[in-house]
Image (cartoon, rainbow, N blue to C red; front, top):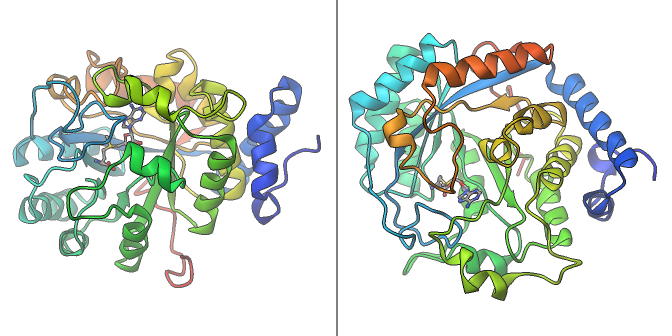
Length: 361
Ligand code: SAM
């Protein structure tokens, strides 16, 4: 097989062939190409975003997620304004340029509350702010953008409509259309991020290739890719899994190498986007997952700044990395990893840079 094509030349059929590739020598070409394109297009800087899991309340019934409303019993929490601001000050003290506020889909995080917190972080601390609060109405999204939020993360999870409704059911009276929300958010001036899980039951090679092609079609600014990690507290760990699984030759496995292939191919089709080396990847491979992501296309890490007591309650999947590690230890480990790769820590907000807003979606 030739080395992978890049950019527009890498179509869905070739993406699928590379996703199915099992020969280690040929895969070396994919890793090399992704790392070269990463170096050429986004450079050696690894941007650090401090992740704050602000609430684990959720009204959604996503069948894969351990904090969904339908998941087994869980102690719920919502951080106070002061607790969130303390995490943001810590991000600043550690030299991070961005804070990411993430939560379940929680109506208790009101428009006014989030706007107030965002305004404070933006105005007083000068950090860039990424929100990842699920599907919210345009009034909320506009208010938060006006208060100073810069970016919004909302994974579309899969481009297969039947699989999407099986894993991410609509709320009563409200059709879920994440791509439409991404398009509207871009028009509001947000940088927008999306992504998928790799190996969700029912995900075929062709679907995953189409997902990667969709990242390109919508020219996403940030793309988060992690393996699906089954949570025993969810419907997808039960009989639903067997119902959804594709035939053995078509079902995508939720393993490290497939996740890395997805990261590498995403770098090739979206050369200047921001791609994190995700926590889920480091759970599959605690010793090397994060490093492997960074050397196969990723250029962002999101160290978890949630206070440890709450971090263990944000259990979207089991074994979430380092629930007992202090924030300082986590940050130090990431800095050591970056130095050992000969890379540098990104300075400032680490956004994708100014691009023409019109015509990108
Ligand atoms: N509520 C927001 C939303 O839905 O976008 C943000 C929080 S949600 C927990 C963040 C992401 O976690 C989801 O987009 C999903 O891809 C990922 N996730 C949830 N459950 C997972 C699992 N069992 N394995 C891997 N990733 C999972």
